[in-house]
Image (tube, rainbow, N blue to C red; front, side, top):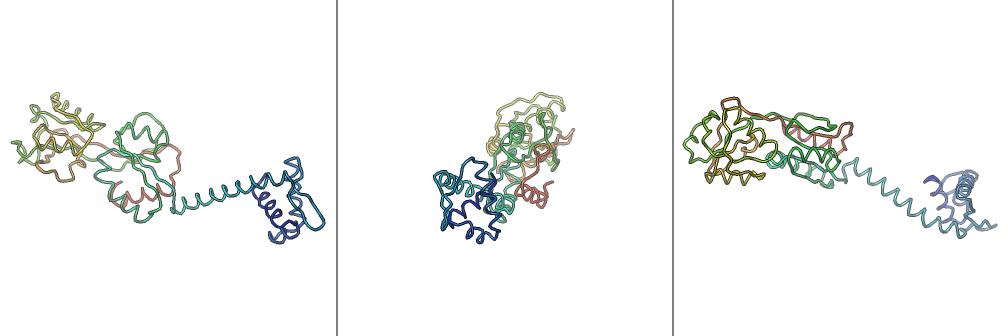
Length: 291
């Protein structure tokens, strides 16, 4: 059973005449009659009571009419949805990202995207790199932005940028008036760790500098970390991106010895073709100098 056969069937039902239906459809009457016969053969029953003056639906035909109208309406809805998706007049784009990127880099990109395509629904999910990778793998998000390396999985990775880690400390700290510092000089300080892959990088950097950091607090919220640092609770070793926004009461120092860094990448399912909206968003990332 093909959709065009249902269209022919419904037109014949509306016109109550194969001749009038064929003319309305710009078909030869023989072609229309043949398709109706094929439909009846497939269903195993006549659909019309054929008379001299009118051809009307029988009980089986009336039953099919109700379903055929619903099927064609759903097919047209599906066509419109696909056209809207391709033309960026609708649809939904889901993105996963680590918080430092969503807070410090994506607002401008999201604003530009929404100005161009206001009818596309945009959903943003924040999580650790491990969580974002899992969302990509399960299809919860179309693509993600993570700190490499990723966990095992079938992914395509597109590097976006590499950045160093820096020290964030209270301006009241005696070392705060410097522009750079050896991480080993901070061995006696307390540390506030930023949860996620950045935490592992910070810990590795401290250990490479010859000490095990004394942890005062851990948080996944950048604002919380900035506030705690400003209050003098400890020092945070953060990606440079996370310190781009000015923090009242805090100073940012570059690390001089074995500087830690991270690589941030865009992650998608291997072999997955990006949707039109995803392609546009990725293009805006490039325009903004990300990638």
